[in-house]
Image 1: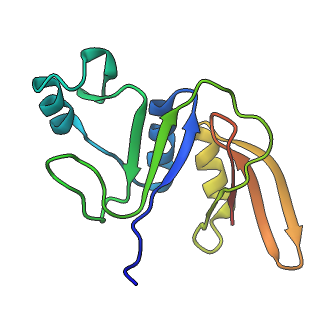
Image 2: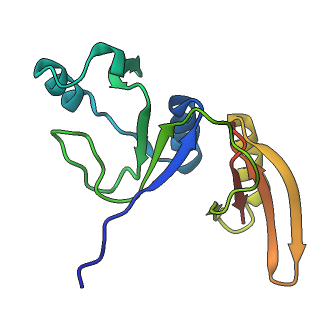
Image 3: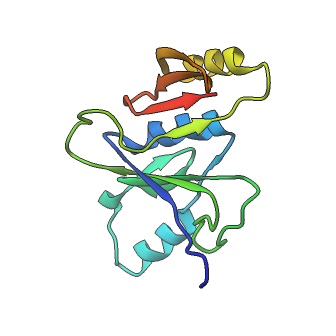
Length: 150
């Protein structure tokens, strides 16, 4: 069996600030889909209303992804071929606890500094956990999605 390619899709009220937060949090890059968008605009397959300008380039209004900077990507589309998070606009607000979350692993002895860095980016601390199996900090991103820092 050939392994499947995947991406983690995260619902968002406003995908672009979420992508910016997570790109900074993880050291990822925001994907540049402007060449693809320009091509589709030129062919009449999409309209200007489907796009916004962000970071000085055209982007999809309702979708934006971040990818690991070392992973391959398609130059003609800007779409990453490795580790990615895709943020998609949804009309409904977040309700309830995440059923899936990210665990961020700080370097040894750097968890508190990493938590402070993430707070400066807009995350909030929800609680500290100390159990026989380890210690971690439960946080929420700017839209309230939970994640842990170990």
